[in-house]
Length: 476
Image 1 (cartoon, rainbow, N blue to C red):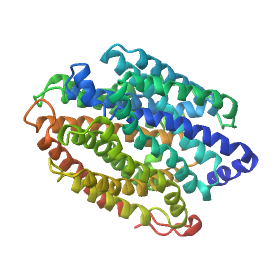
Image 2 (image 1 turned 90 degrees about the horizontal axis):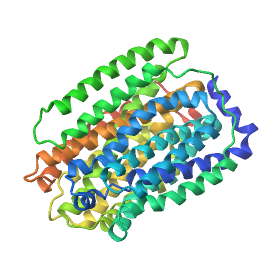
Image 3 (image 1 turned 120 degrees about the horizontal axis):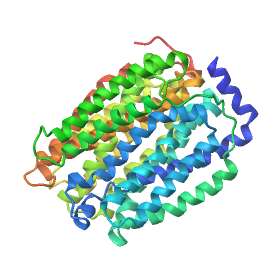
Image 4 (image 1 turned 180 degrees about the vertical axis):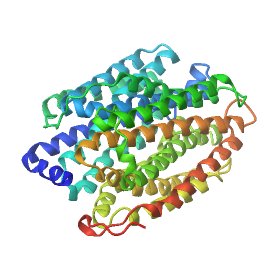
């Protein structure tokens, strides 16, 4: 029944759907660009601001921590406020963060700027996913989600190259000065274009749930990120926040299960009970972890600290793989619409696991062409997983749970990425001879990431298959 409601919405508003989704995609592009643009900035920040690599990586992990804290609230926001109001609020917060970053005199305000921008990005991503699910007919969702990923996926590809060029020539503050007018232009267009009916509900914000969410996700990711700043394995400053966060998350889950019986949960967890949602969710989380750790942290560090490349050269080395991700977005979405998830996801997971295993062999003698080729293979695998898994997971839900489902999906992805970023930098640092990651330390971190890739490949066959036009076959 929910599928019928979702399919009928575009017929009444077909003339608005294209421009609406288009503006949301461009907004997401600008925000995703900001998410990865600092991935090649760690060496420059350690040098310019006299920081350790473990401290500098907070511009990445701090961003992910903030995303993980805000994302659980987006289910409530999508229930309570219109697409237009969330769009304007999200971009306004992002613009304020860009202004803070552009004027930041040091690392403290730089980190503040990244956290504020993450707050805006956290609401835009579920808004885009939910809008595709709500306003695009069911039989075209894979292609539509793939089309959005074409643009959104190009941002992480362009981000390292743009960040490297700007940092090498103008300095890191100019990253914000360049982002600021782009965001302002999107906001101006969106104020005119973004208008769509939204099935709103009058729900109250459960403040205890919000507090537990902040303590839970924030405590765990803060503790894990702080681990890299210490050379000892058991500091209370690390495991204290982790333990407090784990306890708060347990209470958060208990409270949501109680509140969702009356539809008052901050984050409705009922989607997790659906196998068609939970299986692609787990795979998407593992995929996103490897994407951030390998593509945004370890490879840029390897290219700059081991192979001696500049930030711009490192970004350009990663550009072909990102372009491949963008190019494959729509075709993979259309393929998913025809054959279902399993026949697309399994070869993609094998490609990711293979590429990660080769990454673990990289050293001082690795040629740039080899890095480019293996990274293209890796991003091809990501392309084969990204659109099918997201669409498969959200398609399993009734319309009133789209917002909560996308919030769960994005929250766990950001948590996994924050965990992976902190853990990979910590492992690389502890396994290195000096205070900064070296070739040996990075290889150890790559080996650990390759282990995640093997798990991903092993679980991929659990995705369901279906016949054309969405007719489901028996699950394995």
